[in-house]
Amino acid sequence: MFEADGRVALVTGAGQGVGVGIAQALARQGATVAVNDLVAERAEATVASIGGRAFAAPFDVTDRNAVDAAVAHITNEAGPVDILVNNAGVPVGMDLVPFRDATPDQWRLYIDLNMYGSMHCIQAVLGGMCDRGWGRIIQISSGAGRAGLNLGISMYGASKSGIEGLLRHVAVESARQGVTANCLALGMMGHAGSDVDDAATAPLTRSIPVGRLGTPDDVGAAVVFLASDEASWLTGQTIDLNGGSVQH
Image 1 (cartoon, helix red, strand yellow):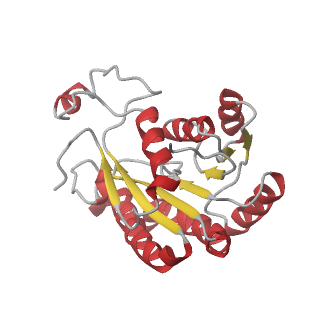
Image 2 (cartoon, rainbow, N blue to C red; image 1 turned 90 degrees about the horizontal axis):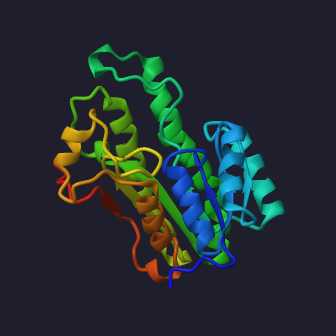
Image 3 (spheres, helix red, strand yellow; image 1 turned 180 degrees about the vertical axis):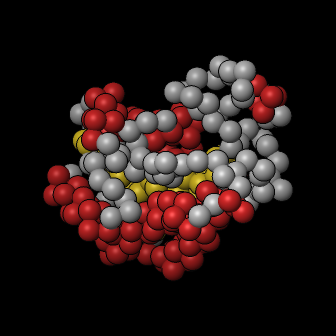
């Protein structure tokens, strides 16, 4: 159950954090994984942790020409992309700034990555998925996309809200072609797969009903399900993966 044998997956931002867990989980289920990251060395480190079922595919998702070239390379290397996981979501230079103090240049960091970056990747693979009659698009989102937070992440949250809205339309447009599109809205995540809390996150951790932070393995397991044949009747949804925390 939930096997991915013979499937080709592209995971963006998979050189660190949650992306590593996603890439490893898909490879364990039999997928060949193209590991994307902006930094080639990080992508290669993830590939080394997986072994023979993965290869590095470093490129900038905000560069449409680079995305198209990478998808063509992946297709030549392993076959057409069956599973796309848009995980890249934290821009270089991200800072915590209240919206009233943010500049248009800072806005663009989030819109370019979380909206345009995801849109580039989706459009680059969607036509082929529809033509072949099977595909899985999984967008890693955030609880910040629907809950207002006084943390200085308004533009991050807005960009996540926007891409969640797009996925709902993509899901309906491609449903009859065997393609599903869903979002995973993550809650508070731990570091490097650890469930050990540090002093800074301990108060927030205590507010999570299950009593711990999320891990890359938690996210990887959810992605494996959404990428499976068994999830063919689940599309157009945003699923909260957050240890039971209530979204407002």
